[in-house]
Amino acid sequence: MLTRKQICLLGYCGALAPFLYLVAVIVGGFLWSGYSHYSETVSTLTSSGAPNQIILTPLFGVYNLLVVLLAVGLYFGLKGTKSKSYLGSIFLGIGGVSGLVLFWFPQDYPQGPPTTFMGTMHVAIAGVIAFASLIAILVYGLTLRKVPDWRRFARFSLVWFPVALVLGAFGAISITMSYAGLAERLSIGSILVWIEIVSLYLVKHPSQS
Image 1 (cartoon, helix red, strand yellow):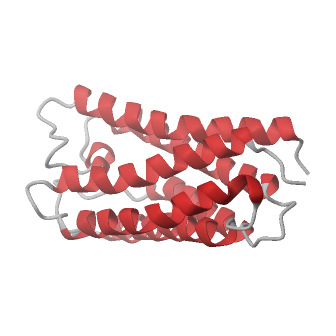
Image 2 (cartoon, rainbow, N blue to C red; image 1 turned 90 degrees about the horizontal axis):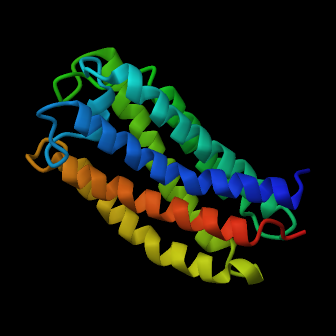
Image 3 (cartoon, one colour; image 1 turned 30 degrees about the horizontal axis):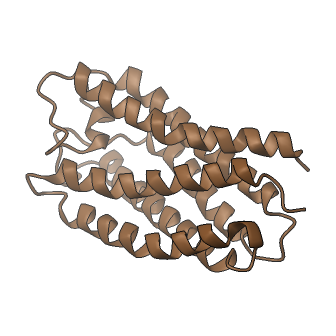
């Protein structure tokens, strides 16, 4: 059992995660001359042929670790409720752990349909991350509606879920388009916004016991 202070700390870890992700993307684009945020995916920054893979992979790895810590914090912070919100924590944790595994399977370079086993696994694991993240949003929205301190967040999650779903689908079908980078960033951005908000809620309401 974690204390309120420890749960609050895990909430701050979650709140830091989106900013770290943004820093990694911005730094990666800055270091790679000619890289286009508009047309190239984030995974290209850590692909098998990326010039700064050794720098960026740890940054994205820490991001995913922070997401896992947030999932732990949400699990214990909401443990005192009668809801089944622990399912949301599980899916959020799966997304974070899958993100850590993802970097063992870098995207093929140059960007495009996967041509190797590693590249194919990258696409598959990225799909798991997207699916788990979306399900986490939906589960929290459905299970926290009767938890007093979290009702507003539940309503937000239920409204945000279709937005994230549409943007996720847009990113997936745009992978071969000239604007693939922009489409993917909109999809990822919708998840990052939700992570930031749920983290701040956890900081404000670290325990329901």
